Image 1 (cartoon, rainbow, N blue to C red):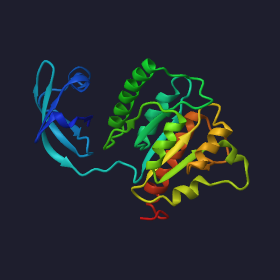
Image 2: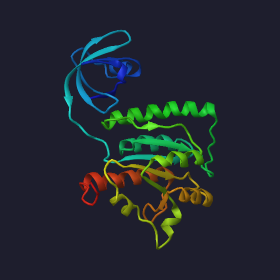
Image 3: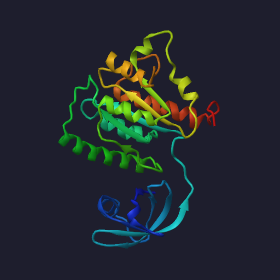
Image 4: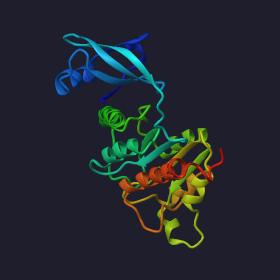
Length: 256
């Protein structure tokens, strides 16, 4: 059943008023008719099966049939801080990272980022990124849409990091040492409900200065396995590992 994320302003008790891109998708792409059913998600995460009761020229009205008791979110809130990569790699990270349960994404301008954003380019990209995570959330039946924050500098990232309980930085040099910080150990110690910030470098990785800055501000460098991962693979590895540990293993080693 097709799922749509509907803003609070479009809910009137058990009636849902759908406009814009979602209206177009329902009427033009899916070609639905009155009586067809969809799932509508509130921003709080609650979802309901709704029946289409009215189709107008620019809007659709649906009525709640049944509220659902579904939970498709990770037990922890994971934010991926991604050093700006080249090409369309960020699109992939956002789409697949959403499918794997990320709560938020922060693009940031790393020292070795080849891509440079100006204000005009950032606004356009942020609009596209927001659409990507919305569509990925619908496809993967998420309860919530991840937030995509505006691009930041490293200094701004450090400041926002003060609000997180766990702060990690994926550092390729950790994979080359015998006395490394194990990502598996960090994950096994996560507590349900914690806010986790994971920093991923761009194609060239982090500079030594960036790593030292992050370490001085409470970020723990970790290795993501013994191999060097591409920037578009690292975040997905991290999210999949957290999902496996906390969802598929049933949180056996997690502190509840």
